[in-house]
Length: 155
Image (cartoon, rainbow, N blue to C red; front, side, top):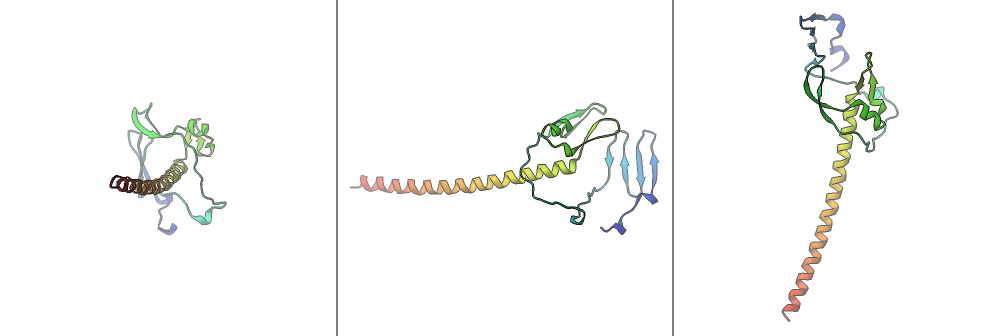
């Protein structure tokens, strides 16, 4: 999709429902009365031409993803706790909104979590390869010992 294919909000209409919901058309973005946003797809700008100082991430310690219930809508959800991200030194993932509540940059948080998972998988694959080599060597030694014992028993 190119910028000329994208619909801007300049030519849109919005409708507010009696329950406080907001529907923006023709781009079909819907905000319900509980602050949930719905759309068919979400894209984040990620063009290399807009970035500098690009480097590969090492493993970054992160808090665990939590299960919790939102107080205002009594609904179960999953995610990070902003204060815990700060405790791990990931302050760049946390902002404060106009009401003083902490928010999380989930695009970046998930990128770090995926990077960590990939690093763990790679380490486990290397460890698995090393263990398979060790098992193979031990199997060879066991076979050699069995042959030696059998030859001594047959004498």
